[in-house]
Structures are given as C-alpha cells and as structure tokens.
Length: 230
Ligand SMILES: [Zn+2]
Image (cartoon, rainbow, N blue to C red; front, side, top):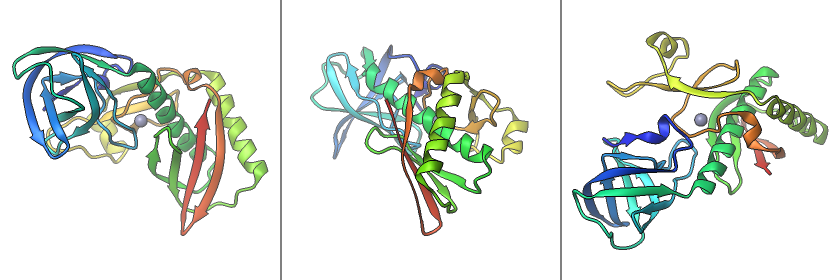
C-alpha cells in the first residue's frame, strides 16, 4: 500500500519517495512508490499528472490492493530502489480542488433547501462538471439564478474546509463503511454535516472563485446540476 500524502495536505505539490517496483502493463510502465503526493483518479476527481524525476507521469490509478500506480509516458530515468523527486502539476490540482469542493457545496445547498434530492455522484472534471442526485425537480431560469446566487453567497462567506479521520461514533452516525482495517476520512465545510471523501479540497471556500450553474436537468428520476467555476 502506498502512503497517500494528499490525504493530509491537498496543497502538497512535491515530495520524495522510494521506488518499490516498476511494472510492465498494457498501458505502459507503472511505478509503485512507498508514498505519493499524486492523486489517483477516483471519486469523481481526475488523476494528477506531473513528473517523477524528469519522467512524465501521464495518469495515476489506484490498484485493488490500494497501491497507487503512476503510469509513465516514457522510459524511467530511475530504477527500483531509487529515491526520486515527485512533482505534480500544481495548477491542475488546484483546479481539481476547486471543482471538487464546489460539488460538495452544491450538495449541501440542495440539502439545506429541502429539494428532496439525494446525492449519489459527483463529476468534478474540468470538462463538464456536475453533481448528480436521485429525484426530480422543476427547474426554471429564475430558480437556477437563485441557486447560483446562494452558492456564491456561501463562497463569499469563505467557510473553512477541513478533513479528518472519523471516530467510530461518526462512522455509525453518518452510516458510512470502510474496508476492513481502514479508517474513514471525512471532509467538512463550515458547520455542514461532514461527509466521507478521499479527494482533495480547497481549505476555504473563497478559493473556489465564482460559480455558475450551467443547467439543471431531471430525467428518469435523476437530476444533474451542471456547473462551472471562473
Ligand atoms: Zn470531497
């Protein structure tokens, strides 16, 4: 298992690590490290890209055994046992943190307004991000504008975003589950209810910038709220 440094610091954009293995895969060579600041794609958040020494990392995935696989775009300039320098694309990470946190904020507002929608999925990619819910709503341009204004008011309040490991009681209260022997990580915006999440987030809401609701679409009992930030 790779130690996931991004869990304790979303702003960590470089670190050192030891190369434990270099695997030959159908997608090219994949590097296994003892620890990593690279976020592996998952939970609706895209993978980081960056460098291990001078070798480009094209994508990062989490293997079933929780090992982080760093897929290389070229032959490595290091070998098994080497100590290497990791550096992620910090601008890309920052955008992912902003989009991801905005997705959580939309879920909180939907809950606060009692819209009778249950969140089930977030898609926090720069290409067409949205928050998806079970349930349908009637949406009008006025309603979208109202939602957008409320979200921007919340962002302007600059609420703090914290992440921490859940206590057993919190795991029970929030009806969460974790793989055997694993801890549950929670993220909490201001005083909103904490939620289980393994992604990266901004540390306070003003970092999101401005949020625009692009559209709200209900279909077959599901609703997608599409947004963008600028
Ligand atoms: Zn999250």
